[in-house]
Length: 592
Image (cartoon, rainbow, N blue to C red; front, top):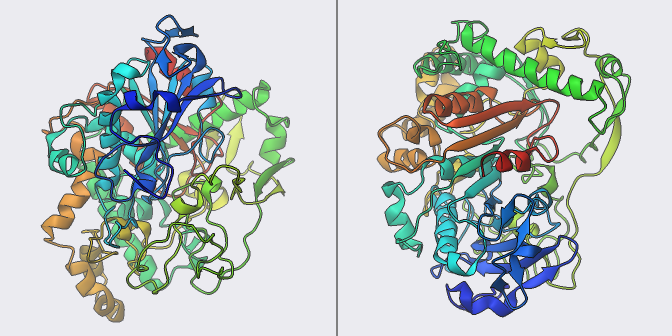
């Protein structure tokens, strides 16, 4: 295995890598980095992982210290936190200690082994320039990595029956899927093609899930249900700011109606067994009340912690409610050109991996790229002929001796807003007046209509469901029926979109690609998987990348299937690894 990127292992046996372990004093951990986890890698830059082990569990020379212990664990009982770095369904590298999206410290300090894994994504191409990372290959890579680790468990410390997956955004979707699809035979042909160890398992004990972008089959209709009363979308990585046209309003209304009907068909129940249903207006019914309870719980938890001094913020609840405070927020972006989609990394990825602005071409023809940067062969069909750097390329660890330049946006002090018209607090309980007022005053619509399968066929999700021959494809079967209902009022739009939307219907291969990465197909169904026992789901209450009901549905389905499910919205946090410090590690300790 000879690649122009750092690859530590020359075989698939980690016993051959004992001399490659090194000690990191800052994290008090033994490290084995840049391990290729498949002998059939098509895009090796993104098919690597690194292993970080609390210091007491290992000895010099890469050997296990059988008597080592830290916290409540020993070298033989320690669980493994398997963190996938997927973002935006893009190809993403494994990270490193202190690197972007690294969350190792809270786990290593508790005696939990930490693994970070990269994977291919929607734009990945092999050495011949052929697209090779569409659905379901990100998931297949991660399953392959877990099987690789289990193949090598005899030379690694830890209890490899206690793997906890973790991911954010598309990575949250992957963490969900790793939890609910363990060892499912429907992936075997892909795993075999990927060089996975077919005599090993890929199930996990638990899944930590942050802001997952899931159920793409119904994501558009869910988004319009939640945001259809907000006629303006903000300037964001999903596109420039805009206002709905009469066509968009009518189309959104039809999609929102479809979601109510779909949601009510699910048969969901809350913890008390009460059926969760939406009223025909979309703003009543037990499901609406349940969602508002989740938001109220989120605000209550935040204001309680604020009043007790358990947050970094030092203002009072009264100051917060009146807007008498400042907070850090990303500085306004420089204006892009008309219709420009910039900062694509921020979309479904989080601010820590924001795509920087395009710079002038370097001597190698790449925008701001070093001469030795890995280039994407051939450009993207319909997106211009020039090769380009992906987000995954930009957040890869630089060569030794080269400083990594973080891409977080500059932060500026931002004044708070008065919330007293829609949020009340009596010292014990917070209450939001209604969902639409919350949206219009606190978390506006981020995406235009449509939001996932976009009218322009240019979203990350459109690319995710493409093929080797067609990079971007429409995929949402709800768009054509909604379009039919507005055709008389909008004949031009009907003519413009009809044929593209109609092509989705009956495409069995496309339906299969959707099926394999929708976790709902594997919860409470006839699918045979070795599903995880424990799930923890956290979503920012200011996350507008997808509808709140997507994770509400996930939590209800898991609980109804008898799984230990811990679900909450985290107040005022956006699309990110929304959590309070250390609580993910607390959760892992609670069942391992």
